[in-house]
Image (cartoon, rainbow, N blue to C red; front, top):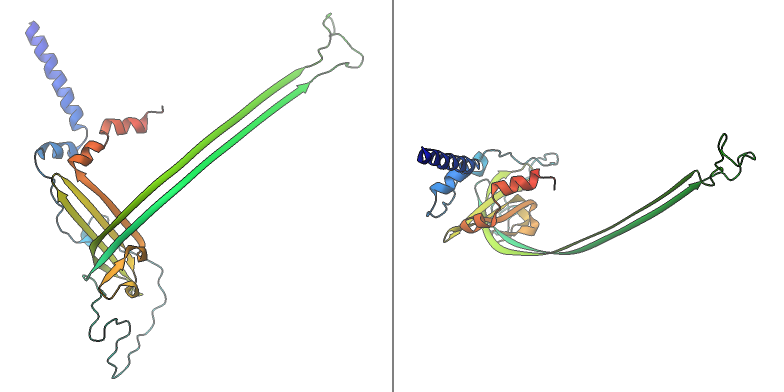
Length: 251
């Protein structure tokens, strides 16, 4: 009988542990299935077919009729006499030179203090020096209040980031004014860790160099993401329970 109860307690504890582990969702099952395996690279796909993709809509000038020069060997906007090698239509590839350097040192301090004092009293109320029907003298002070408030807040930011790399991007959309919407993604796997680099934004054909490259500082609405996934990233992340506790607990 005692062994049966002990077995039931162990079974119950194991079940609760399993339920708690599965509470993290499908990601927990995926991580369990990938034990000992290298993280898989993402499949090459079309950015325009991804869930949630929306074509970029920007303010555009009024369309103008194109003008052509008869018997001319030169084409407007060309960087080379024989053929323009730069990306100019959907599906073309250009190289984005990511050169991001950011450094910020900010220090703020705010001090505030306030002190208030109020006194209200009656020394001689129409000649009456004592409270009626009692022998108590009229108080010199009927009301006395004091308040003091002070605050001292300090904050500082010291950040320095640098990212220099190249990534090939694909033209996914051609806007009416000739600007190009580009998006590029790069994945590199080293042992059990994958590094991801995503670049997206809007570029002008005039900013593309003759070698079909463009600097990231010339990309409008730039979206640059650099991160990773794998065993090292997983260890650096807090558990789901800790993240939920940090959000829900008021203290």
